[in-house]
Image 1: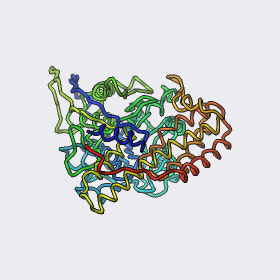
Image 2: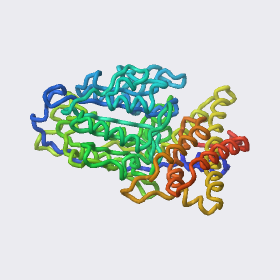
Image 3: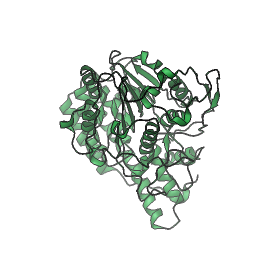
Image 4: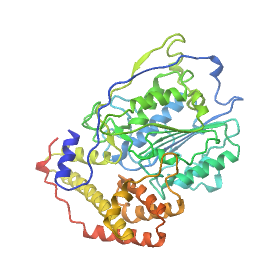
Length: 492
């Protein structure tokens, strides 16, 4: 159903995108029950404290799933015994009471799910959700924090830290709703600084974003006591799930995806298990299988950093819900079926799903229908603008068309950093975001960040490239014809 809609869009030449969806078969896994009461320690005893940073890097109701993911993660940590003083939450906080939310003040992360918004701390919201505050919170640098609650990771050498990020990503980038996006090199430098301060024992990072592997590939040292898991490798999409038109589908009053596949996989697993029994490696394996791929699309959950920590029990970072005590007897090997997700949607296309269903469900002839129609056309027009701009930039900089395919698709070899000159990369992607990508919350422009890495690797002149970006973005926007999308021709 979803793919039919988008194929029609493609035939109408209104967008370059193709809806990406696939069917996942139910997978089963066996959970080790090597429980020992030795690992059941209080979070504030001599073993050190647990700290957590949760970040939803997007804004807007079309990105509902990211804030829902973060709220769900908070509930897991809270039920696991972590105190609010040790959980720092970054979320724009604009969906719970959005005019589009059919359940005001409530956020759900799965079709039959409970409210995950209740009780979530609003530490950093709106403009305070930015890269500078995120880095300051990691480092415990109070003077560098601007706005928000001021909470930070004031950790010591025996403490463990868990960082979870969910949003749109690109090659070498994680999106943020305010200010600059997070470049991989800057994040790694902050992690190195935290390590040099000897202010943690170990750190676990989970990242849900397209091309999320590029944040660590070739640049995360193995000696920082950091273990990272990403939803995708360095060159592929991650996926939204529980989307309209898929299975399981959200309640009929929702027109947006409720969750992300990688995220909901680790959280639904954590919801039901005694995490004193399950290791990071075990969760990685079952999440990897649930996020497994068919022959058409590809997403590979990846591991980076200090592999020795994969034997740590999840309890050391997330705590565990007492309701799940001794889930599975020590001698038992329970085979559990993970939820079947028959349709998933690329992070890049989830916004289109929202606008399409919003338009399709609005009453014929209503003002709501007309508004939804305009939003859909605006998004398609924006994508065409981005596609045309990047092709124009490549043509001007390199002077001939046959470079386009190489610049658009080439990536660094596995195990190597995305880009050689990170200053060049940051300058170009920030310029492109400012002049081409600021009009949409779908962050479609991030899919081209790898092209700017390739330009920098080709040693382009940064000033000339920046000037070309500005000119191409402005000229492409002004020359773009209004799209036509006859609503009577669209079917589900």
